[in-house]
Length: 140
Image (cartoon, rainbow, N blue to C red):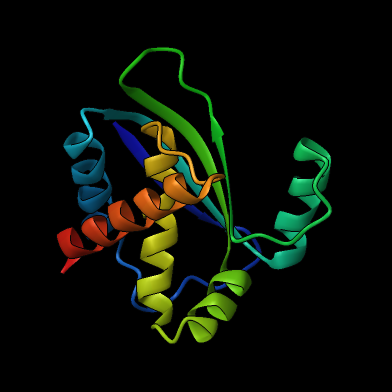
């Protein structure tokens, strides 16, 4: 049931409190019929995440999140999730939302992927957005 947060050469946001976030992430997983065995969030810069995107996925693009599913048991989440705080900030501005709201949305997005939700096709992306919004209502 370990959930960890690592800030890789980047400053932790002042609003970020680990215990409430962990509780919230566990509730997201539980609502989808999953439990968290080990979940590691690694927060980093755009350049750091771009390097991971190139090395492991061969994608020469900037992104806000990359989720590696390390699970070997159905219903048990084990994952490393990498998030660019710079990209989250840019997207918060782009979508006229707060940095906190966008960061939580992206964190939920990673968990939802681990619960089997996709976002490549239009219908999948629409469902993912609805699920993200539902996750955000659990936070507030």
